[in-house]
Length: 261
Figure 1 (cartoon, rainbow, N blue to C red):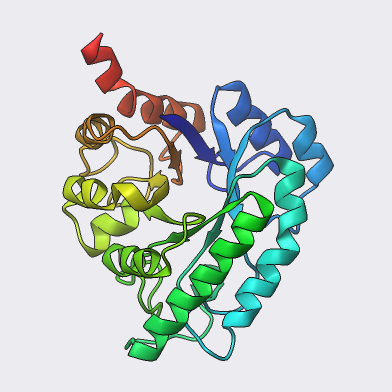
Figure 2 (figure 1 turned 135 degrees about the horizontal axis):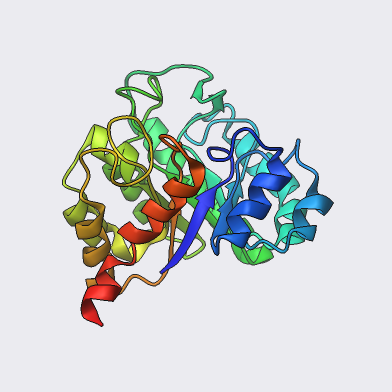
């Protein structure tokens, strides 16, 4: 497994480029969100490997009126992804503005399901054309993202399955899944064929592994036993010190390898 850290959530007292440099020097890949306000050349100069970035800027995957904006803005971001060497572009079930639902919806419909599957298939074809994978991230609607339809892991997994394209995968966020569904080990086992990347944070608090209730050492073992060789990204706040948070993350996801050796 490769380990990545989201630069949007650690070393918050530093400029973004310096955050990326610190993460890279600590031996991790880098995740980031919106690339439009970033100095791309300065980011490239850090030498960091960029695991993923947000893959659209407007529109809702499941809204027939705006789904085309998801595809259009995704295509517009592809040159930036190529410049940074990003291989995974992250989309959500609906449009987010500052992390909240742009247009809250509290009941999903069959039309939303169909639109979401078709849009995700289009993104898969776009990804295939440009050598990228689009990853649909599950979200929790209990605390962080109320009003996002089809956001639970079981819903996003079903949409990825329905899209049926190898360049359309699941960004399986275990923090969101724990808040909304739980049963994480069985979830990762059932979702394994469709996972593009995994994100982690602990519950409650959304801080690094070891600060809450999730047994991430057990999750790491389950992933290793299932043969997962992809990326696990820490999309979490540092509870106290960012360097300590990175160390805790590394420890949680290397314990299995140490035990086997």
